[in-house]
Image 1 (cartoon, rainbow, N blue to C red):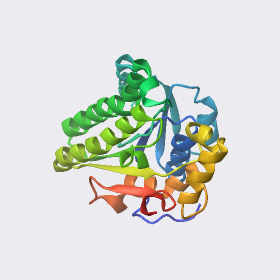
Image 2 (image 1 turned 60 degrees about the vertical axis):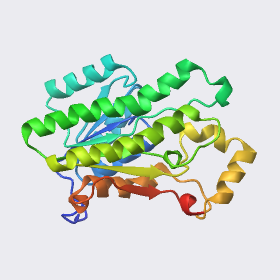
Image 3 (image 1 turned 180 degrees about the horizontal axis):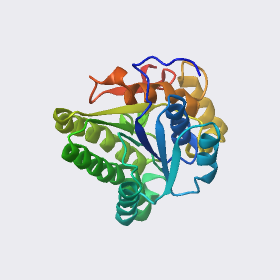
Length: 255
């Protein structure tokens, strides 16, 4: 195994990644594991294949199924973490869903489900994490996966935009309150990444062309493109950063 700079060495750190069964979450888990972190994968769907992949490569990985859109799911997750000795040193809030509809047609149920999953769950898990770290007197890190729609309105995604805009504000507020306790809170702003959430856009010829026309890099991002930023924010290299955004978008935001 190649030597890793101490600034980016994650050995001994336990990192929890939500929404980790596929896409960005699984890619982040792979990146952390490659830098010797102990990863805990959380998702509603089956995590057996992801855990088997990581452990087969010699990494430490555990999977816990939980529906983070519901309070009972978040409570159950935290109880499992405590019972199994898997409380994290780094919390990565990645889980997110999209419901696409014209604003006038968006159902209240879809609105609430997106807000509960993409924003309320982050508040709840981050608060549980912060309380545990403060009580134990140990530092920690929280990494929130934001979006370019934390800054823009988007099209037919009112609930997602509201949640991601709120998450940016929450990231900043948590950074202010938690840095005195040694808990650093930062965000990653992905651009348009090729995942299941963006499949409808990529399969729409007009929307796909319009999106690619604005990306200076000329391509959709891959989940793996976010690994470097995530490892950086989880590692010693970013120990004096809090309330920051690391944008990984192929240049979308500056076009």
